[in-house]
Every structure is written in structure tokens, then in C-alpha cells.
Image (tube, rainbow over all chains, first blue to last red; front, side):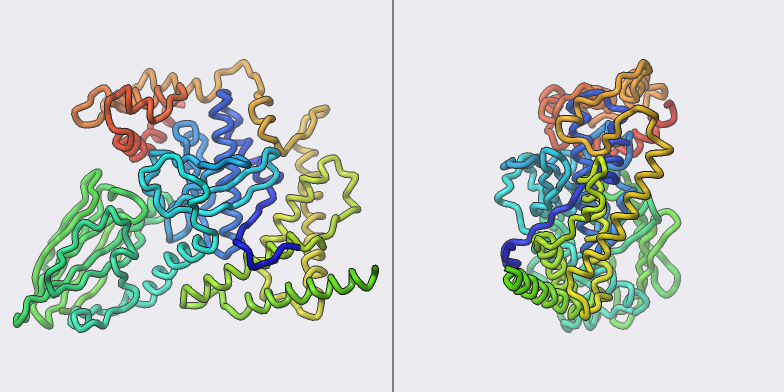
Length: 310
Length: 225
């Protein structure tokens, strides 16, 4: 019997269900290389989904592109949607392989999980993960982060959701922010966004920047965005400058038609709408101490509104 | 001999019980992420300890089944999922492996019943059932049909591009880097590296341009299938 203190691993027996899903996807494909790619991707996604379900995560297994017979013919995709967190890419590697290939078209996943498949395809082993593709196509498996780190990483992303549900109805006070009292549901940006999205830092002012993940839409149209608030206090002034920005979470660009609306107590509103391929949208304004305003993020039929006080 | 194996079983049970206690101590719904992480890590260790225990039942009454190993694996998979979700209900009165093996036994029966029903309705007479393919089988067992494969149908639609949508969607300043060309390259098995060289655009630019339009492409092609 092996000691339980050694490095965490997880093996998934693959049998009827896993293989019948994979066979359903390749039944229309006659190109041999493509067949193998789709089959292995499918088993790999199946294994990661199984692992995450065992660990108590919720997934949208059937909603991924990897389950769509069209999508798999048109791209090398092995995505798995983890509910309220984002998309993972589940990359299959064969036994004894030393590197795995990250498909270049998916640089924007929340993480890349590597799955070793036995030659008999009766067993999958979840090897580890990396949170960043880092523009690399081939990735050395010995540089993978452990499964323990993977559980930490996903669990921490999950927490934002549950805390947010409790706090959405509150009025958020910027005075408290500037005094250093910030609700934990507003995260530091390096916890919320990818490093390449963090272009906005103005370092030399008295300012606080925080962001919160917001989910919009239903089912297939569901998207996650990060609402980022930067509050800049000018010394000896009752006024604060507020910069609000909206970033995609888990993607590199926003879908078109997302609205960022700033409304004040008189009902006047500033509205910004995303165009195709916008990496972010923003709106800037200033407000006086005590003034209240609200921010609405809307997409299609769904919207989330938050109240703030300066 | 007997007392040796007894001792080993006791030690195993002790170890598994400690893991169960550890898991139960951390709530799955705890507010703090660190608590939920600890539960998950302990749960993962617990499943591994069960797998490596050497005390999982062989379910020998089913040894005669043609695909015994596959039935075994499917039932095992269902068992792990169930012990993970029901771990808080485990009654410490029984040895942990007795609890696991009892669940395994029931899930095995479920799998056998399910596959039997499928066998009756789905498998044509005389055809060998081979539900689990190996790496070699994937490329071997291509059924040759006279009809056009779906891949060929898709290729035809892309070539025709009835609404001229695919040819019209192009990278700014690179009319040759349009969706139609990229799709045809991909379907012919070209890798992104080659595509980027042929079109003279950076790899990530071309691939993300394509990937972002994926769902529109699928909806478009579906209309003509």
C-alpha cells in the first residue's frame, strides 16, 4: 500500500460511458489523425469532469465545445466548463510522454489540466495543471503544478461567487474603502485578472482599486465579467474620481453589446457599450462625498445593479 | 498468516477512518476557501487510499461476463463518485472497506442491468460488442459507408459559402486571411504554425481571430446541413 503523504494524483477508470461519448463524436470522422485527436480529447475532458465532480465542483459538462460534434471537427478543443468559474482545457497526453501540447487558439482558459491516458484507454490519470498557457505550445510535464495546487486554485476562484451573493444588496461605501475597510468580495486585481490584463495601474496616487466577478446571461450566453473600480482621492478635496472598467473573465475580449451604465440619484446616466473585440470598456466620473450612485452591468436580458456611496 | 492479514486490515481500516474523520471535520459548504480545499485534498487522498488498499472486492460472481474488466471499471467509477458524495453518511460501526465494497456491489449490478438492456436494443445480431476502444482501435475501426461523411459535407458548404460570410470575415489588412481559407486549411489537417506561415500573420492573431468566431461559424454551417 502506498503512503498517502506522497504527491496527490487521481486516476479515473474509463469504461462504457466515457467511450460511448467519445465514439459518438468520432462516428462521422474518417480522417485518422482527426479521429484520434477527438477521441483522446473527449476522454480527457470526461476524466477531468469526473475528477471535479468527485471533488464537489459543479460543471456544465455537456455545454462545452468539446461535446459539440461540429465544433470538434473545426477545432482541436477539449474544454470543460466549471460552473461560475470558467473554462478549463483538458489536454490528453499518452503514457510516458514528457510534453503536452496546448492548442494555440485557446490562450484564454482559466487553466490547462493535463491528463495521461493509458494505451488501452481504460484509465486516465490527472497529472497536474498550469494556470497560464504563457504563449507556449508545448509544455514540459515536469513543470506542471500539482493537483493540490489545482484544488487550491479552483476553490479560491469559487469563493468569489458565494460571498458575492450575500453582498449584492448592500450599498458599497468608498469612504470606507479609502479608510482601508474593504469587503472581501471586492478582490485585488491580481487575484481577479490575468497579468496581461493588468495594464491600468496608476501607482502614485492615493487610490484603491478593487474588482468583483459578475455573472450575466443564461446557459449558452452566460458570461463572466470583472467590474473594476478605481477610486482616487485628491487630498483636501471632498471629491473623488472614479474609474470603472469592465473586463472579460476567462476570455481575452468582451462580447459585443455589454453595457456599463452609471446612474445617479437624479436618474441621469452615463452609458458605454462594448463593440466586437473590445478588451475592456470604461467610464470615468467624479462624485462628492455623500453622493450616491449606481452601476449597472447589462447583457441581453440580464443585468446586475450595484449601489455605491462616496 | 491469518492474524497477519487481520492486522493489516485493522491498520488499513484505522488509516481510512482517520481520513474519513479528517474529511468530515471540514464542511463542503464552509465559507472559507481553505476549509473547502482541506476537505478536497483529504477526499482525494481517501479515494487514492481505497484504490491502493488491495481490498476492493473483485466482484467474482461476474467474472464470466465477456467484458468483465469494463463492467468492473464502470462500476468502480460510479462507486468512487458515490463515496465522495456520501462520505458524511458513512457509519463508523462498519469497516470502511465493507462500506465501499457494498456500494461497489450494488453499482456493479446496476451497470450489468443497464448494459444488458442496451445490448438488447442497440447491438445488431452477430455484431461483436466492443464498447471500449484502445488507442490502436480508434484508427482501425473506421466504418466505411457509401454516404458522404459529415466532414465532407462541411467542406462542401465551406467551399460554396452560400452567404459569402466566410470569405467576408477577414483579418484587417489581410484579405487572404479569411475564415474560408483558414477553415479549409484546418480541415485539410494543417497545423496553426503552417497556417500562420502561409497567411503571413502571427499564429496567435490568426488562431484567436478564428476561435472568437467559432460559434458564428457553427451556426452558419448548421443552416446548410
